Image (cartoon, rainbow, N blue to C red; front, top):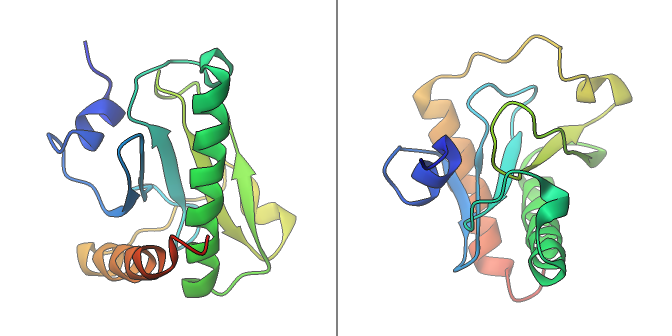
Length: 137
């Protein structure tokens, strides 16, 4: 049975997409720690990040790097934090979290409550930057 992330990448479940190519998909976390908190997944469903084949593992990280670069241009932050936990959904994924201090990365922090309009505005802004710069990223 397909994971929720596979269904999102296939378009069966709506998401706030920020980037996509033939192998990877990035979308806003609907329970974000901060504005711009993004999840990056391979479209190929694999439960554990380290079970990805080397080429796909490297490709996922390069794709995440390009998404992080776009996020930094939209969300004021000192860095983009990276977290891989992978227990909540059995589909390999990377969290990209705009941070200004280390405590912004504490996954148990209260989540933001954003409106659909806020999510859409953030996603559209990141997506626009990513699409305009993906050859440079």
